[in-house]
Length: 359
Image (spheres, rainbow, N blue to C red):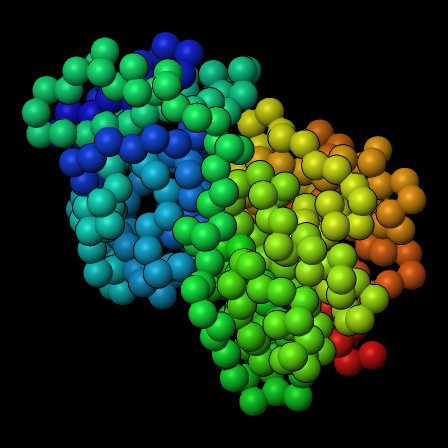
C-alpha cells in the first residue's frame, strides 16, 4: 500500500501503508517507549491523535488481547520506521497490520521517524492527515485536508471514549469507589480490583447526585484525551464533592482537580509520552521513573489560594507531576502509576488512596 502523512505546515512524508485503507485526521505526537505498542494503541488518551513511535522496529511480538487498555484501537493513525508482520509470541493472536485493519485505522511505515520526531520537538505537536491506500495517493489532496483541520483542543473527545451506562466491578471488598470514565485505562480498574476495592465506572457526565446516591467511599478521576477544560462535568463533580469524600486522580484527573479547585492548565510544546520520565517527590527527596502520556499540565503559578500544593515535579522541564490538598483528602499524579508494561515505581499511589478511604 501507498501511504502519505501531510502536516498542517506543509511537510509531507511518503512511505508504505499498512492497516486499513483509510484517511484520518489527528494531532501528530510521538512516544519514546521501547515496548508496549499494544497498550499505546488501545489507550483512550490517544483519541484524536496520530501516534508516532520512536523505537524503529514494531510488531515483532504481535498483538495480545490481555494487554489491551480498552476494547479497541484508539489512535487515529499509527506511524513507525519499520513494521514487522511476522511475529513470535506464544500468546499473540494477530499482527499489528491485522489489528489496525480490524478497527479501520491506517498505518505508515518506511519513513524517517527520527526526522518527524525532531520536527515535533522543535516546533511542537501539529495537526496532520494520514492516508493509506492500494491506489496512488494525491499528495496535494492530503495536504489540503491537513491544512483545513481544526485544532486538537477544539474537539471534546470524552463522549467518544467514555462508557454510556454505569458499570459495576465487584471485588468482594469492603470499600467502593466511583470512577468517572473520561477514557480510563483498564489497568487502573484492575489495580483497584486486585486490592479488593469495588468500582462503579460512571460516564464522563455523571452528576454529583449520581455519585452521592451510590454511597461510595471515595471518588477517582481517570486519564483521558483532549483539553482538560472540556471536562466540565467532571470539574463540577469535584467542586461539589471535594469536602464530602476522599478524591484521587491520574493524568487528566490531575488536571481536572487542579481546574476544579481554581487552578489553570496549559498545553505543553510536545507533551510527555514514554516510559522513562523522571519525577522527583519533593517531600521524600526521591526520584522515580514513570510512564506518561499527556499534552497538558497544571500551571504551578496558578495554585495560590486553591489549597493545593505541588508534591512532585518533572525533572526534565519542571512541570507539575503531583498535587495534594493541604487540609482535604485529595491527592493526584500526572503520570501513570498503573503503567503497563512498566515501570511500576509509582504503583504505591493506589495504596495511598486506599489508606485514605479506610481512614
